[in-house]
Length: 262
Image 1 (spheres, rainbow, N blue to C red):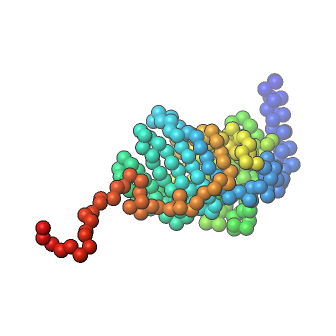
Image 2 (cartoon, rainbow, N blue to C red; image 1 turned 180 degrees about the vertical axis):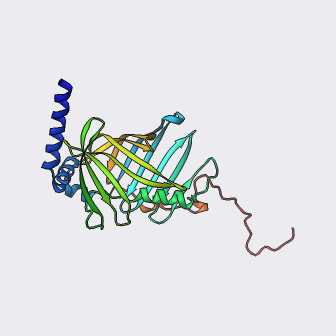
Image 3 (cartoon, rainbow, N blue to C red; image 1 turned 90 degrees about the vertical axis):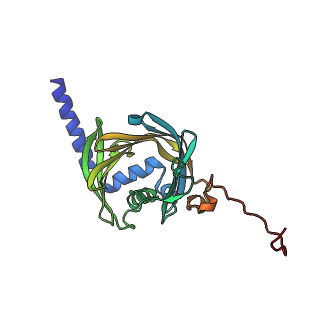
């Protein structure tokens, strides 16, 4: 009997929350929780430092991520004392894989396109109308035992992203979207947690990526720097002579005016 009463109470609470909230109210709660709309609009970049954990492969690697508006990103990880770099300068995505070569190389089109999409520095819930996106309040949906508000973002390019916000705090708990992986599509989910203050904002220090419901990668950050100094050059693909580890072969020095012979 108690279980029935609890279920009815939960249903009534969810129903009340659903009818009480409008899209504007949901967004206002989210903006306020994160640090305010003006602060979110002013955000131009960040550096995230911590660990990348791939449980299926037993990997726990240091990682640093720099992002700069509007579309630049650089990711560095270290594996077996070798630094792996992936970056996008806003047009070209490139990588340095020291196990294959010390030279910087452009990413293949499919990989580069996915990385470039991730490099776009924007909060989809902020200024969505000005970007040509549409946002719809779909109602309430339980998420891991918590009441969550479900939003659907229809981007100007036709792609859809679902957002699940904590009904009490307004913080984003999860986003999900269908993405093409080769010849098929897969459900990509990103879970956000361990929100803590950083540079006047409330930031998720724990992020987990799932593919078709299966955990893939966990990011656990120790430090988040808001709007650090970042030169555009750090996102640009170095040419071969500038690539770290590439040594220039010295040539013989010619003596001016000296011709052949002993």
